[in-house]
Image 1 (cartoon, rainbow, N blue to C red):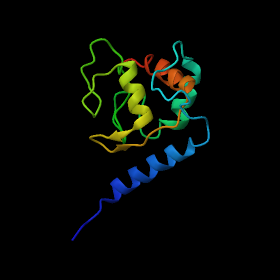
Image 2 (image 1 turned 45 degrees about the horizontal axis):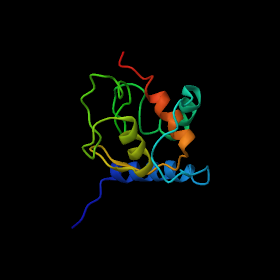
Image 3 (image 1 turned 90 degrees about the horizontal axis):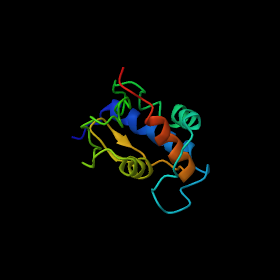
Length: 129
């Protein structure tokens, strides 16, 4: 008999709702995961708050997904769930394509290159206290 963990269902439903909330807001029109350089930190903070914060904290604590503090720190030894090292390109690709991680499923995010650059710029400001 197959049993389903209600917590896992809740995670999937929340992440799906977040992914769907971004539909129609301008996709990645270049067909590339390369971010535009010089993203806006303040715009990235706004995007993060509305699209990412339900699953990711700006600290080091884990919610449905890992905390983002120190993600781009030079001494960060973390890797993405797909095994890739943390770089602007790999994080951009992960955000756009999503995937399965240790704590749940990251839905693909429908961000255009400008929004992606803004989120990356913001994530780079999050340091470990």
